[in-house]
Image: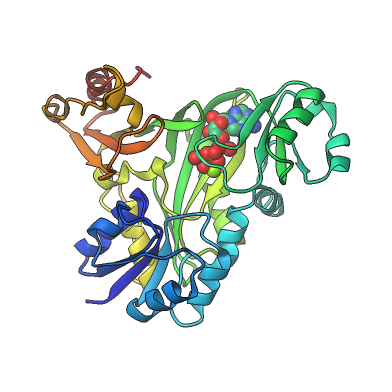
Amino acid sequence: GATLGVLGGGQLGRMFAHAAQAMGYFTAVLDPDATSPAGRISHQHIRSGYSDAQGLAELARVCAAVTTEFENVPAASLNQLAQTLPVAPAGSAVAIAQDRAAEKAHFVRCGVPVAPHAVIETPEQLAAVPADLLPGILKTARMGYDGKGQVRVKTLEELAQAWDDLGRVACVLEKMLPLAHECSVIVARGRNGQIVHLPVQRNLHRDGILAVTEVYEGNLPLAQAQQALAAAKSVAEGLQYVGVLCVEFFVLQDGSLVVNEIAPRPHNSGHYSQNGCDVSQFELQVRCMTGLPLVQPRLHSASIMLNLLGDLWFAHGDTAQTPAWDQVLALPGCHLHLYGKAQAQRGRKMGHLNITATTAEAARATALQAAAIVGIEAF
Ligand code: ATP
Ligand code: MG
Ligand code: MG
């Protein structure tokens, strides 16, 4: 079999490797960390930095195609690899996803509504911020995830202070919007331009981190779901994107839809597809990068995904204690996914639970039971 490569050895790389291996491929992971979740289960683990010429050359030598699981991988590294082998997604698309300012400009180009915002890179731009963007959220343009690199600000004074605190790096100030809920769409686009998608996901975030994803008939009003899907497709097409792309949205209290951000890879909100769909987002990633046919995935079960954060390991004190998986796994339709991370830490994504059932009501009932067992707040 051929070897498929992935830049980044986190849980997304690990689940990509699972899917690739199930389809008969070998996998190679490039990640500097010796204990990375994906590196541990792959046939080859190239321990080098993401810009290291030697590491990249070695990856190119052993692989038939390369993808990424890490959205901050240097675009230049993807471009270098693309000189000798298929790379999906392309460096140009990843570069846009890495920069909130460029990302928002792309949404505007695609005619998709975005939150009112201002780019702040200079003191002059800071001084020119219109007061009606407040209260708002100041976000670093680069490197943020799970709500990191974000400060909520109410006044111009707080804004100036927050920009200082963030080190005066390039930022985007977004107006704080009244959210009714959040949703996301995963699309997969092939080299021939064909697009397939997963059903629209309804997401609950807590403290800036995804907590719960619910996918079943009626999880969102149909018009909202259709609008989100159309917007996600136009964002992917506008990028000439090849690969799996997640587009995150806010649904405002007046029912209107605003695009939040994109992730150029499979996404936490798509994990339910491993058990709820006949084709998972990771299988879509394998199909995209190898040029295999894309088929429209079918949701065969009402699905709920619960994130398992490291905090659950510390429910009873400062010594990490494994949650009661035996009780969770006694629930029908409960599927446990753990990422093989050595240490549980508060705020760290350790795994997830996928709950599947024939009806949304049954899925919710089981998910609430599972949540109670492991100590996740009800939703
Ligand atoms: P991710 O891990 O998804 O990449 P991130 O660090 O890039 O997260 P965002 O998606 O920008 O962060 O924001 C995290 C969460 O904060 C959102 O899902 C939403 O719940 C809340 N949030 C962000 N921006 C706004 C806004 N303009 N108005 C209201 N809530 C917001
Ligand atoms: Mg983000
Ligand atoms: Mg986000």
